[in-house]
Length: 139
Image 1 (cartoon, rainbow, N blue to C red):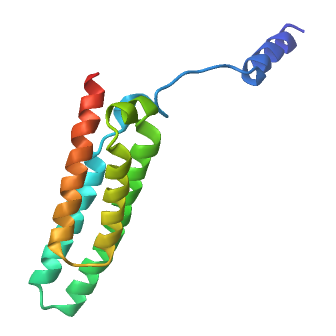
Image 2 (image 1 turned 90 degrees about the vertical axis):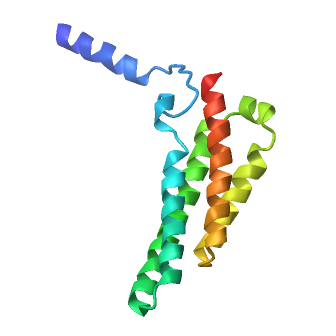
Image 3 (image 1 turned 180 degrees about the horizontal axis):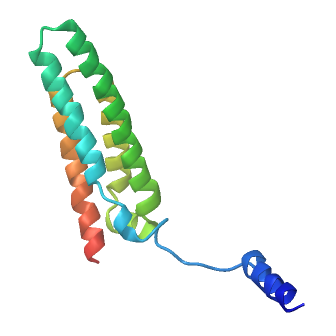
């Protein structure tokens, strides 16, 4: 009988509603714009290598890798935007929405071109997101 009582108590703990409060999905150390920057560096590097090569097989591989990495940039930016940044950040940095929108659009543009200037612009946009991110971590 004692075991049954303990099991019921344990079940009550799991089935009872509980309120939890968190700023983000996990403790804040899991978010960092560096993930997007690393992928954007790869995008730009693939563009540079593509433009410097005459080997058609190599160029095809560079394009494939560039497109994959550009998609990862979009993924990392959207996770950061939707999971880390909160309304109070947007109030303090009203340019955030447009900055993320523009950066993800630039990542999409990078999938369609080998223009290194697009890769550089993407890195600049991520650098601005990074600056704001670290300012929010201070406060």
